[in-house]
Image (cartoon, rainbow, N blue to C red; front, side, top):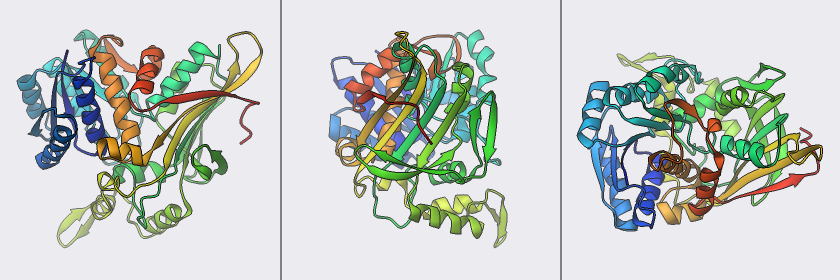
Length: 407
């Protein structure tokens, strides 16, 4: 039915391409021609070999610098995809969007843009592309991962089926897996550490409230994981949720971290290894965080040793659709690291982002989601996406809670 070009060759990309190949071999036949490109072609080739061995499907591979717009345009025109799926680094979003505009092709990503030289991510840069995509008759879909992505779809499904309005929203991201390493990140180390060390922000009474990074901690007992400490953080879907769910009085994002992770991260911060300011070393400028990322275990290598589950979901409180007063619902997915590795060769953190990237792509190429301009997940019908979560590896469940969260 469609030709797609995937940019990036990390764990998320590996999962997405594996799932696209599965969809192609199934009755749906959604992705008829899959192309994969990144700066390091050998990584693309390794993914293609795994896809061939697991599904029998062939993936074409290419070497490309995603920040080189003319080269990207040439590759897109050569392949002629109906969709470019950006699974590269967030600071590459804008050049890839520029290339899509010039080549006349639709665009999808999983994380919003952030500048290389500033640990700050927000949607304003990509939202500014809306008119350009609309005028070209093209669609750009932002944030089709799990968080952002599925968490926004969960929220809008609750608003469509359970709650007339949402007054309070808490996003809970728990990785209960153990990879056996002293210190490692479950997705790109540079992006992970930039997010974790940034000041926390949450939405309250029409404004952003900022607090120091990792300063607010609460405990929560997660199904299939157990009790964990989770920390208040800022995450990009809070910005889009505050925009598209205007009645929100409070929206927060929480992520779990173990004590060992916090200890290691604190030491690395104290000695300057998480800095993004260049330093001079032996006649060269190096960025400490990029050097740290180079010596840490690669996330795509953690799949074989990671055991346990992730549990990610949202708790929403608001006025019930049926007129029965205020109600609170908890909707979430539990994903097994071992099952994710058995299916795709990747751990569950990559799986829970790569599968929604595939589903968002399927929504676009089949026309179930369509439009002209730049769109966030909250603006689109949640039902067909939720159906594919159940059928393609990320089943969800929803339950009513006795009342709003007390933390």
